[in-house]
Length: 321
Image (cartoon, rainbow, N blue to C red; front, side):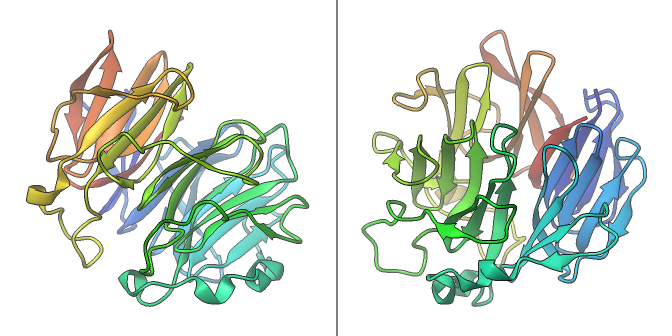
């Protein structure tokens, strides 16, 4: 089991998956996402570009996406299309394994496009999340920070907004602050936002807020494995500028598990709480792993969380190949 760890300082790799052999394998700076796709290799989306590895993260090649800052990547179920989401918020597609790219221009014509911006991100937004479910292979689900959830049912040719219901009772520019869209089934998604945790069972036509009884309301990424929904919350977003360390006095982080699709949650103790916020998830071999803002990897075994190991930097993403 090879574990890839996207961090504030590139990609780290553990061939054993136990972190006793961890090494940095890609000097890509702030790396927002590492993703392994069966038969298609691993990808690292970073602020210095999109990188691909065909050997479980040992070596990497940079793919020439027109925008440099990469936040999200997805592969169609049949492997014929590779999608990339960027900062500023654009989506590109490649049909030749990343050699050339075409922008999905209709994405820029969504009715709310002019509202996608925030001072926190240099007055712009980015495509923070992309995913495709095998049961709806032509449907691309995009999450924009700040901008909401948007869906294409024709491989990105046309788009519709599915953000109504994600708004909060607030008047600032963090409305529709989508960090991650967990695509559970073709129609069921769990969306982690800077102002709450939401679920839809009809592909975003309506949303139910799940965190009304939880502390927070800042959520980064939810995760589902073997009938359990995992989520983590804290009180405030990271200290600015992006890349700085969290203010431990204001984190007050928590980890939650739900066995009923988010109807109820149980708070779980974990190493590093309440100072370290769980930012990333992965699972394999009956184990769930999570990564924190202090570079700690924790593992859930025997109904408890323990420390597996550490890397030197804030963990942004985890992937197992």
